Length: 546
Image (cartoon, rainbow, N blue to C red):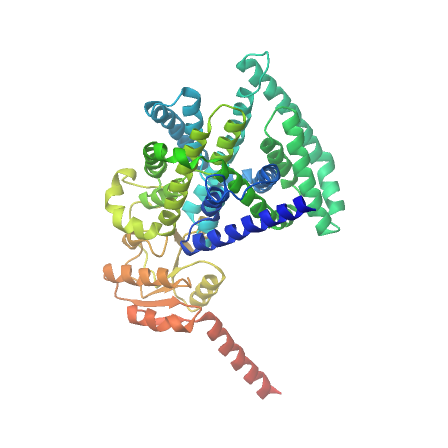
């Protein structure tokens, strides 16, 4: 009973520290990954030394990794790579090859052994899917062109990291076979396991999940059991547990319940990952960090500068604008939670030491912490550096613009934002004889407009260079976007372009109307207020008829 109470007291203290550090991290707008690693440093043997139940923490951390990979496999939408076209594969593979090759030689130059340099290079290669998707979602840029490109090459990275885990696991296996023979044997076992999963997907999983889905709690429990079971089987066959969990997610990705399962498991994943990062942080020998500061800074600068540059080069060669390349490039300016998982795997296999683990963790803290601010303020940063980025753009970035004015025909109204609200406004204007032109940062929305016979252009309302290619002689510009900062930027850039027509912008909140009016907006659209007033008028007319 005493051990039971001590364990509960220990976990309560650790969770309390995690809440406190996590709250401070959120105040500083940092991802929880950074906070959780710091918690591990604080509660570990070089901090408050609260951690006693190491085996229990380790088990929870391994379950967290398994659930993480399971959710990644569950959400793996290979069709997104096809819809993104060659750009996702070219950018993903190009960045992986560039970072791993140059990262390896930087490691050698810093005096590390070849195997250690290989681990460092691989760790620098991957970007954090969780952090990037979260930040893009918060900024409402998931559907933007640079957002779709980023998610496309993140999927490519996710696939590569699984292959890297297989190879590194094979390198760490003790046997009488050579490395090549061991890798071949692992590949054979992997193919066998993959065939088994494919057969389960085709003949069993849809029926089984339909049976389990009669109770959502049972469906979630089954999914967790399936993830852990395949992770255990993968470990038994000589792979890492992560590979099995990843395949488990893929096996359920084709079922109609993938969204329900992933939605329910996100909280479980985040809670269990807390223990992985705590366990990881507690393993870092802080007394060695002082010796790692210089190599950590060098490697961090390589990730923060080198990764975005290679992405901008690839996207520029493929015909994208420098702005798209810059915004997408910032999304790879950090290492991933997978980098830390790989480092932990290398330590468990005896291929790297605690010093290397500490180095990779320190690089993670620096790059994740810094890139978070870079991504959050990416648009403002672009304004300051755009003049320096001309070398990353073709004379004619044909994938986004033709290099000339979008159209020579007269346009009466330009609408920014082609969602439901923008569509309704456009339809009403067209019925009254106005010629309408649309702009949206979602390529799919632009294509939908084009299919309807309407003219539209891909672009961001807060892109200063967009004004150069839009029709100049137009009576009115309408923004259906409710974001205040975007609308303020649009008004500013229209003024800089000497636009003489009217400007109408949208706001969900009346309190921002005055600020937009002072900035130069001629009309403030308040959808909810306007709709409610319209409903009241209709109700009044209905009452008169009665």
